[in-house]
Length: 556
Image 1 (cartoon, helix red, strand yellow):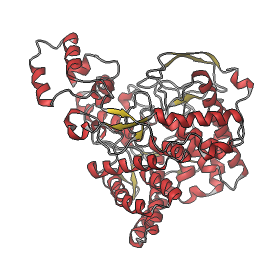
Image 2 (image 1 turned 180 degrees about the vertical axis):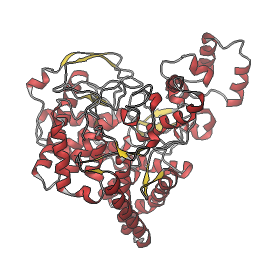
Image 3 (image 1 turned 60 degrees about the vertical axis):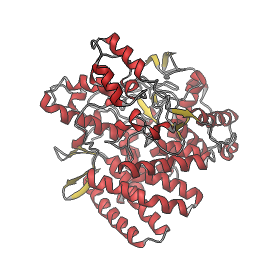
Image 4 (image 1 turned 90 degrees about the vertical axis):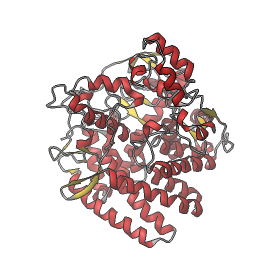
């Protein structure tokens, strides 16, 4: 792999490791040893001769439970949005895949992991099932009355837990040393709440217990006497799907530091936030804000611990539902312990927000990141207090986070990383809206609606321009796809579709964007290139945001 990847035979490092082998590995290794040289042309010919195109071990699949006009669509009052919801619902058929049975028979020839049921992929270069993406996909599928497809996807994750002891980042062998934010418990709860299928729940609970045990055994750290969780992959080499990128980053540090660097890169990928200044040394490094300064394993993430807090509460509830009082009590005690830790470690009174903790300095990260929004839905103890939530709203207003025409940016720090300003990500909009949608506070409910409407304005405008949904958007313009990171912006797109459909169901009286927004007042030029294949977008030039963004923007 190293020799081939260094030759840049494919533009995307992921393309090579996703290609199925045409023969047994031993046969191919022998053929490789007989090559006359390792020139680029020789290696390219060898790879093309001995491997098939990426994705040929996946099959297109039409979900038999797909419904053309789900019931919720008829409640949408604006005709244009109602039609759009129908079109988005149709995208699930385009994103449906199943693993070719040959993968189960010849696993050594594939990086693809076999799972028994069909699934929905995110889209673009992401042609396999992914972990945390699927939570928001499920919201869309369940709204679309696709109960069998939803259950099959959840059961695929159960199968992976049985095989590997965790839910991998995605459906590839090279993802099995890292997971993603542990949302399977919430997926099961979401499905069970709509079906009351006790048999399904009884089958899933041992797998949920096993996943929880994985996180509490392999991803914990003691902070001030409290047991909390962090992202921490044991990987000590470059990510195969990003081999060239990781090796380029590693060239900036000594060989002695490279194993730790690779582990921190993989740990950031485990967070789903790959990459962000959230994980970087932004102050004292010789190469500040470079991926070479990454220190993911030094950060105690507020969002991960919020999710695990929610999982403990949910697992107690689900075990109680099947009559297992002993297990329910165990999780209730774990919840109580985390609630105490959460308040002691994450709340920052000055900022009026729950913040990540830097383990090395025992201080909060001062920069603003939308990871704190997870606490609005899945927080602990006083995080459920309306007064605290109104302090969070005040912080958002003071920093003008809600004023961007394209949605809330993931951070207020500009960088070359995709989980930074100016990108807008569907899940992080969703956490605020879901957290405040039913609040007893009028200002919080109003803020939730504003965020939902802004998201609908931008995604609907982009849809009308490109007939595409994107994985991320740009906060400084309405209908502008996102940018930055290791790859071009992708179209599809699973979680954007799911969040959009969910917002339309929560607010069926939403309107289409105003004419002033549709006139692209924030955008000079948008040129779409190669969208049919990868959804690549280039040529985006946005005017200045409504206030200055710089490296000193802080919430403290």
